[in-house]
Image 1: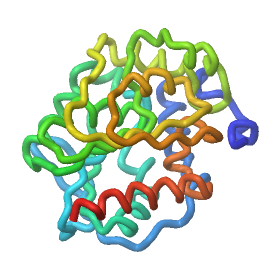
Image 2 (image 1 turned 180 degrees about the horizontal axis):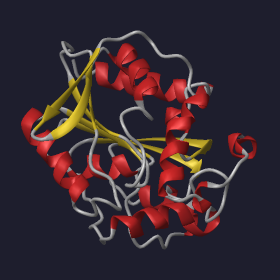
Image 3 (image 1 turned 45 degrees about the vertical axis):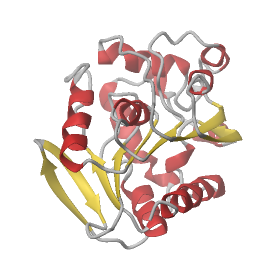
Length: 248
């Protein structure tokens, strides 16, 4: 399993700066991306990167990183591949991070971009899955990839995966602490596609959602969506792209 190959310092032992650098260094698990056009912009005061600006279907994307890491670069290559597969216009949001910007700064940024674009699809992984869930109202579809939802961190899967070389229960708990709030568990009223991983501290809380569609990767770990050198990551990209094409 990839966790056994990761080596180095576990992320739970890294400080904020080290964690952010580790997210960017995750590119070693990503394949060279498809060649798609993109442009950086600012929408309602929030930096964004728009892939395939002329695409007919707009997808608002929020990156993962436990609310205190991740950025446009950490997810750039996977989103280029996803754009090529889906043909959509992907707007990736560079929302403000904790601890410099605690709750509700990231939610405010997410809403600001959502309000400007009124996208038919919102999508996110991990902490970005929480943001997508919080701003899903009015969208046709919410795609939530192993979303980080429950600030109580009290589920059995948290206990089962409290420690591991990859992002684990302790590290997720630290993210909530750095965000310095106790945000509400989101209720997603729009149609949703939920993606879960078997080796993930966040599994149980994700299963509390009322999802219209649920895809479970029992053999995968938290974070595999962006690790496009893995066949399962590429499989997931293709699956979601096919679902989006049904909306055209």
